[in-house]
Amino acid sequence: MLKHIVMWKLKDFAEGASRAENAQKLKALLLSCADLTPGTLKFEVALASDGLEATYDVVLYSEFSDKAALDAYQSHPEHVKIKDFIGAVRQERQCMDYLSGE
View 1 (cartoon, rainbow, N blue to C red):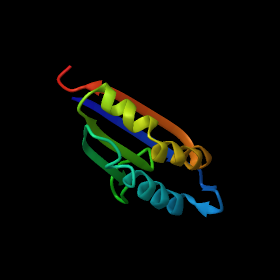
View 2 (spheres, one colour):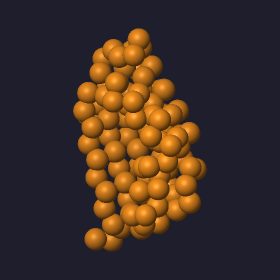
View 3 (spheres, one colour):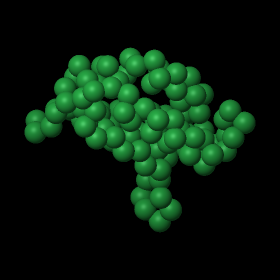
View 4 (cartoon, one colour):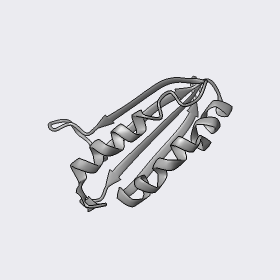
């Protein structure tokens, strides 16, 4: 199993909206990609919560059966469509893919 974790820190204002508004939109866009391809085992999107430590605004935690399943997700046209929005609103991005148990 392959785990794919991505975190975004958003700009204070972008695309005519506030950081909080863009975080909500990003969450909805990501969740719309949850069932795009076979081999997606788990798909969670969360926003930073008041009162809890967070250095990023949005996090995606996902699990895929293997690298081929992750590659299929990443190249799916619906996923590719949201990348322009993400690029416009993000200040920083961190990502890590790893094999479970290694």
